Amino acid sequence: MKFTLPLLFFLNILNAQQQPLSPPIEMYFGTENVITSTSYTLSISSKSTVFDVQSNDQINHSTSIYNTSSFTPLANNESVDNYWGWNFVNDITIPSSPTFAYGLYKFSLSSTNIFFYIDFRDSRFGFYQNYSPPSIGHDADLWLKFNEFTGKMYYCTKPGYFDWTEISNGQILTIWDIKGKGTPSTNNFENFWINSIAVVPTLNNTGIVVPLVVWGPLPNFLTEGYKIYRYIDGQTIPPNTFNLIAQVSSNQFTYIDNSTTAIGNKIASYKIKAYNSSIESAFSNPASISTSGINPNNRDVSFSSIKKNLIFSLEQNYPNPFNPITTIPYSILKPSHVRLTVYDILGRIIAELVNTPQQPGQYSVQFNASSMPSGLFYYQLETSQYTAIKKMIYVR
Image 1: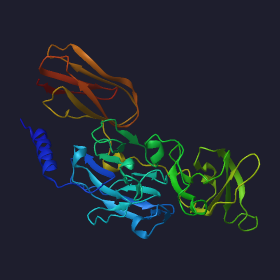
Image 2 (image 1 turned 45 degrees about the horizontal axis):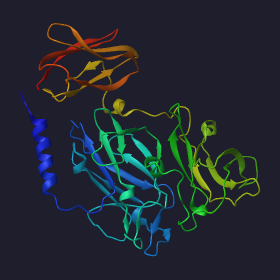
Image 3 (image 1 turned 60 degrees about the horizontal axis):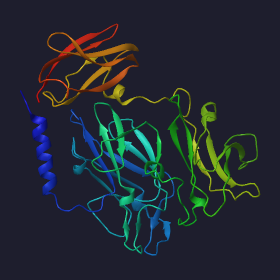
């Protein structure tokens, strides 16, 4: 019987205690449940104009140092205290850490097809040297992790917390929503409106790749809503003539253009106007995207189908032995009604963990035995096409 997991966890704690005082990292990344030899690298690349903070608190256009970077963690950083990653832009140079700034970033995970976006363009976050006391970016702290078993990315906003939120593939997150800060502020960004628009590929609610238009609030303007304009290269209209395609509310800063799925291989360009009851703003900058690959057949492929072929399986719980909570993994090959139950050594059902229809995929569920005596238990997975039973040991 092996007890390697507790030993590794103990060693991680010792290593964390021996590490020197860390530089001001604001975005952390770690992995868990990695059972392969894969080394996962999270890369970020800017998809908008990126803004930098100068010593006079004026937020200007950045240099290319903040546009692209990556970080590869040690495998299975089970404790967030051992996570590491990026330093939010400030006037402190930390050669050992990559750096990010005020921009819309695409996040891509190596060895998978996982990607998502985070918009950091909110001048209320980050470093201001002239503040008393100075803010050094910790209000933008963010923890990211990849779980190899589930094939999912997750985020958390506070250290040591376990309320991780799953990130959907292609999803766009914003630092102001993550932190619960309401409408973002762009007033301190230099020439923001003429640098505000970006357009990136994302997945709509049917899994089709479509353009996602992203912007931010027009500074110092009483906005009641935004108008989205589009020009398709090759239309029989004068070049650079943009047509109004949608209007959205003043607190919406994204628009998914589902109508491009039938366009074919062209260039779609977008502009935005803010408006209120008496006036419209000038156009924003234009942003363009190729529509090649944007079609109903270009659908998302889950990480699990890339990592391995799905089968019906019931995996060994972990940890095992356990006290008092353990995780039971299983996978489903075809749409099925799934029942997962726990029995004592007398064959009595003591818990029904799952009893519902499920789609193909990898799943996991937790079993809490805190109200049970120590001993041997059995757990059984049942579908119309597959049944399996395994043992687990609860040690108080």
